[in-house]
Length: 367
Image (cartoon, rainbow, N blue to C red; front, side, top):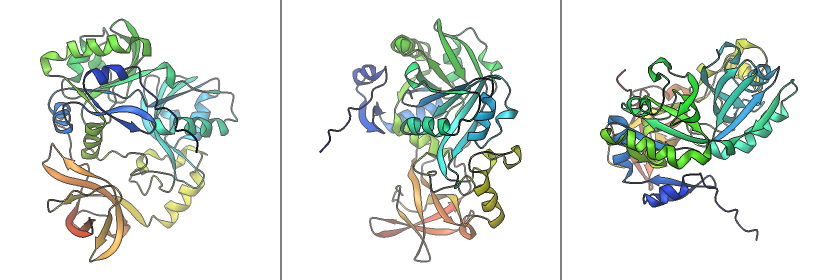
């Protein structure tokens, strides 16, 4: 029997352990799931500021004379419409229209595109892009060159502004700037995965512990908290943001997942386009739908969803929503039932529990 591969560690692993974080195996990475507790960390982000080490995420860089053409061909959104310093959410698709991954694409220059991809998919994504590279461009997996920190919450800007000379208020949502943080070269992106305002910064791993410490000094007046993957999950679920392996995977298309807005069928050829054209013509048979539990049980990933006692779909994600004081979830339902106000039942430990479909996102921050 082959030995299991050792867990990969971020440059901040010893810091997390010193803080008493509960560590878990997350896609082959030794990652903090919580520090003080998921509820406290969740509410710190909703009410003030929290920091996540998300250095397990992958980075892929596409460079060269035809870098834009390659990036446009392997993704669903329109790379041609990006301006220098702008980012967007997009998808990598198989030819049959299912997701290889969901990603962020940053346009550094006309010949340089920086992709942030999911941790467990980074090698697969790299090989997928490289397999489609018939352009004058190079593709490089550069994850080891970056520590990625997410500073999120209403006080995220005030915290980070103390550490950089760049005017953060000038960086629009889904734009980024290459500057310095704590005197260290950094990519500062006005992005996040929590439903709150905030920034994600990419820095050299060797500077991780010093920058981490400085961020916590800067945020001390706001009660800044370190946050783990547990709160990251409840925060993104309240905001109804998709998680690969749950709401999206190789069997799910963007149209089924409610992500048709990241698909630009009129931009020309891209991987998976023909399958999506056929699906648009025929229509989808299932759609991702939000729901709230009407009783105490918590819906969990994979639980069966019933309508009038008959199996109708499955839960993709479910948990308590700390900011809403409700138990919520996302599920796939037949398209005729995928609308707010439909009574459903989630089978919890063999017993149907009442729930109701609702509009998403469940939580929207005050602008």
